[in-house]
Structures are given as structure tokens and as C-alpha cells.
Length: 203
Image (cartoon, rainbow, N blue to C red; front, side, top):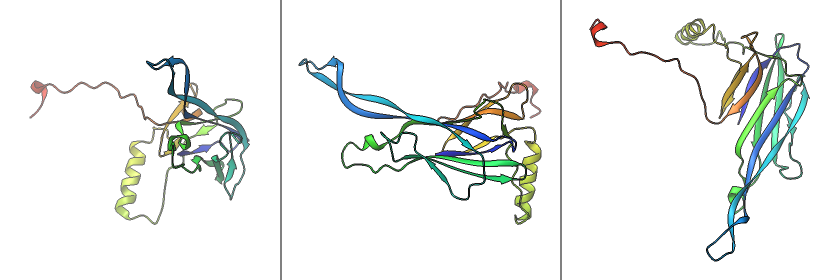
């Protein structure tokens, strides 16, 4: 899973925080079976790390291993490129572990999450550029332009890849955000609506 986003061209670096959980079956220190023996339970071990990266042109993906001792095959990949005056950045959390024949759960990542911020917590994230192309079919291009007009006041700061994105928008400037976070379960606050009364319906 991962995300792509746009960063103000004046920002020198970003901070990436990756976290997930690993579950293992272990004997409980407090729960016992009816026979009085320690019960085998699932134990969660939190894993992850935080690192700051300079923003620069990266032709090749940069790999970072947050937990080299305990999870050397769980890798964060980073790619960044210039687009006009800003940066387009893509970050992925990749699980390159091979599943064993038994206890395959030990090679899985649970509750994975990526958080992207500026090291000084300033609002460096800006609106993603709107997609445009002269090679599109006329009808497709017209629909694209119509959608851009319809949602011109909606700020899209990031796109999730196999995940949704939660954005913390700056309270002083709604065109900027100070944190992006992946969210496995999407959420959105929908304004309350009142259905029309039958007596007021023209039909």
C-alpha cells in the first residue's frame, strides 16, 4: 500500500513514519486452561520507525528498512520528482517477506499505517495538480473538464494506492495540509440531508 502527494517546492524534506503490528502465538503469563496450563494466545508486537528524507530528483526508488533487526524485508520505497515548482512524491510500504509453510500469519503485516509530515510540522502539502492531456478522446476530456469545474473548490492533497487517505488540513489555510495518513477504513463526514416531503414534490 502507499500514497502519492504534492509538496510545496520550497520544502527541503519530509518525514515518514511507518508502523504496523506483528502477531505471534505465545504462552500467556496470566491466562490458563482448565487444566491450569498457560494458554496460548496471540501477542501483538508493534513495529515501525521514523525517518527524514531530503526532497530531490530520484530516478531510482530509494529503499528504507524501518526495522532492520526484526523485519529486514519490510521496506519503505520513496520516489520524488519535480513538477513545475513543486514535488510529486510516492511512498509505498512493501512486505517482501516470504510466507512459511506453517504459521503464515507471522509474515503478514497487521494495521499498517504511513504518516507523512514536515519535520517542523508546517503545512507543506499542497493541492495535487489536476490531470490534463491533449491525447484524450473529446468526450472524455469534456467530462474531465466538467468534473474539474464542479469540484474546483475541493482540495485533493493525496491519492491512496490500495488504501484511503486522511488529511489534516491547516486551520489557517484550507489550501494546505500539515499531515497525510493512510487509513485502511475510509471515512468521510456527510452533511445531513432532509428528504423532500411528498406534499412538496411537483410529481
